[in-house]
View 1: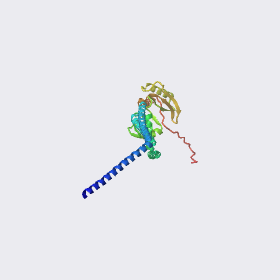
View 2 (view 1 turned 180 degrees about the vertical axis):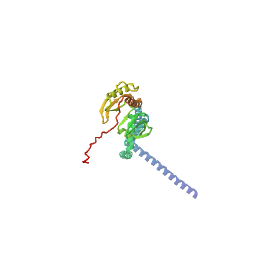
View 3 (view 1 turned 90 degrees about the vertical axis):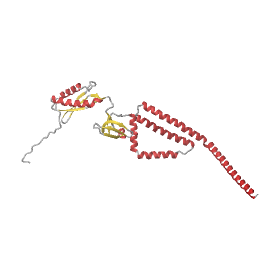
View 4 (view 1 turned 90 degrees about the horizontal axis):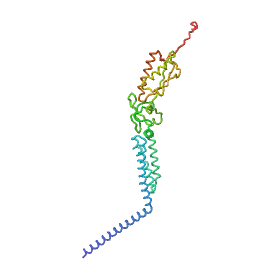
Length: 301
């Protein structure tokens, strides 16, 4: 009988303990539901609006990204820049949308914005030159002051454009040297693009001796231009006396040719001028000085 009594007592205690645990769990569940209900009543609408702001902003960011791609394609922007620029624009819009959504929910965004600003300032100061080259590369790819294959002169060098990168532009000089120019120099200094126009003028300054017939020299130069197959008859090449130099008379000439024929025509014209001048007795002067010596009395010396 004693054993049965002890078993009943233990069973009763276990039952009471389980009942207490169940009641505690139920109460905690009710409390949690109550808390969630209170939070939802207090912040639920803000959370829903915040989520809606993010979703709508996400849609707008994607739309703007795709729209910018179409606009840049129609504007003939370099393909290598289209994807890069559109993605940067997309992520910037996402950051703005995320901050707006968090602010609507109630998350303090002032410190977050300040942290982003401070981080951006620190990165900007540390990478100032690189960011300048980067921004200049974007501008070059968008506005295209020159393109691959053009012959340009910039930053004290000249050559054919081989590649336009985000940070640098690569040229090859006439003697096939590889020249790397930071893009910031190409947007902050003068750039001469010799390939931008279909036609190009050859500027010549030809000097003849004072004792030579300069009028004859002018007629010879005009005849050379008229006979050359690459020089345009219209507009008529300019050939005129320009100035009186220290050693001779300077004749200015300005014929027009196709851009692609520039150098061949230039070398051919220079050779013809020399040959025709020699054949007609026209002297090309060289620098010289005249010295006047005063003879002093030998007794005084």
